[in-house]
Amino acid sequence: MLDVVVVGAGPNGLTAAVELARRGFSVAVFEARSTVGGGARTEELTLPGFRHDPCSAAHPLAINSPAFRALPLERYGLEWLHAELPMAHPFPDGSAAVLARTVGETAASFGPRDAGAYRRLVEPFLPKWDTLARDFMSLPLTALPRDPVTLARFGLAGLPPSTLLMRRFRDEPAKALFSGLVAHVMAPLGGFATGAIGLVFALAAHARGWPVARGGSQSLSDALAAYLRDLGGSVHTDYEVKRLDDLPPARAYVFDTSPTALARIAGFGNHYGGYRYGPGVFKVDYALDGPVPWTAKEARAAGTVQVGANSAEIGAALNAASREGRAPDKPFLITVQPSVVDPTRAPAGKHVFWAYGHVPHGWTGDLTDAIERQLERFAPGFRDRVLARATAGPPELAARNANYIGGDIASGAVSGLQLLLRPRPTLFPYRTPHPAVFICSSATPPGPGVHGMSGHNAAKAVWKRLRQI
Image (tube, rainbow, N blue to C red; front, side, top):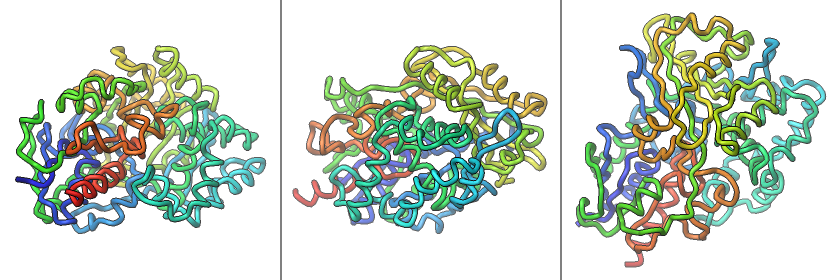
């Protein structure tokens, strides 16, 4: 009999498996797809030689993850590559705000009226970032805070809505960039604790940047799987699990799946009936004949580029998708251009690029034209460089990854109390009604993103359970 069976080979499932294997438990992972990776995969979606990331591509949370930093993933081929700028936010007039590695360069891009306010916001936390990140991403009750005072100060700044936090800023560059940071988790700007979301992304960039993985996000997943095998664990792909009886006997089962799928497989009925899924995204992967012709020079040097003319336009796009049930006319776009720093991703002189905008949950329309109209505002001539495109709306994203119900790549709405208490209001989110069954997906704290901390935290709960019995 195995000690632990993990269902789902996304970053959280693989991390949980590695953490348990490191403690000497026998572990096997079962994945429905033909490759490991979940939201961290790389495929040729458009043309031969163009290697795209179907979901996550830039990794500020991964490089800052306490779980990943404790693992020897570099020995298994993971290499982080940094663009000249982690992120840029261009404006229609050709100017741009930037999220740079240094606080000073970032503050200077906001203009003199907001430079000091930004410094006062982030500088108190930056020297203690590693401890703060561990405390913030280990909640709840998986570890005692190492610096409760700093964590409390962060909570005072971050728990209010981002719209309140942004009152510190007077001009649009700072407001727009910070609004874009919040929008990475598809939360309306006025939601509870959205200020903390923006702060986390900003601090992560200043601490270690927003890199891409050489060769694509698949490199991270492959490194985790290779390390697991060296620890004695096994990985089984093309293995779809429809019920618990499909799995070999084990002392514990860990699911890197949506709560909906877990309830169906384990027979938990309506246990997660109150769990809410959020808006979806519409994503386009591009093969380009050259780099994106951004008007703002800063955007040409950035790995990630946020596209939204101002904070009001960004807020309106988020509200349209999440509250009004319609696709925005001017979608806020998150874009990543990996080949700016990684030439292995495309043939010589060519580039890969992706962009996504927010749409209502389960939306079945086509946002391609709206996305490209928006890109043309900030990069005139963009369409002329398109060699091929691969589009994926909510139905395609859900078919590609079963955790993305209705196209929700956050695996659950990141709003209200569900931002902190997911998948149910409980102090023990990784446990389920069955004492031997656990959940470790992005539906558990600390939530969405490629960081492995949900798997890391769940592994602690499993380890404590196995030690007890």
